[in-house]
Amino acid sequence: MKDTSTKDNKKLLLIDDDPNLILLVKDYLEFRGYNVDTAENGREALELLDGGIPDMIICDVMMPEMDGYSLVKHIREEPTTNRIPVLFLSAKGQSQDRVRGLNEGADVYMSKPFEPEELVAQVESSLNQIKRWEQGRPKGLDGAPTIHVPHNVELTPTELKVVQLVAKGMANREIAKQLNVSQRTIESHVSNMLNKTSLNNRTELARWAMESSMA
Image (cartoon, rainbow, N blue to C red; front, side):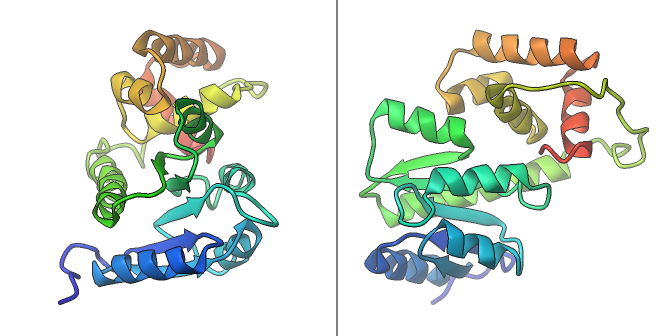
């Protein structure tokens, strides 16, 4: 029996050039209650994104025409799509491959072959994290004055990734684990961004990221 009790009609975009994997994963996710659209490469996926924004993207890394890295770069540069969580699937499972995937903009990196149950667990974890963050936002956030920072603030690619995770409500410890660096390194990035923006704390940093369409 299809499980639709907790999925709230969540829409997923699955991208892979392997038709057998597409068929297997799509069937498994739809059986678990998700709505799944599919694409064979990044360019086809961008065309689908023009027609609607999914709740999450599951994407192969190595694909023809446009690979996963190029796709995520496009997604993170566009205000309408830059908050979509992205799960990378890749046959490359070395530590440096995972680090690159996360640094390029993915939120989760899974190596092939993988167990379907683990994939579902990762999808549910990512979607639940967003739900918890939205439910836990301070009640006055939407009505609060807009955050103002100097117009010439420029963040490094790593700082941009960190501030996106800060805006998701993640602690420095969690961010360090996800990016495979030390907590001290994350604290240093946050401190540098506070100095650049003249903001006072992580909450203001998160608000600025959201109001500036960075997260």
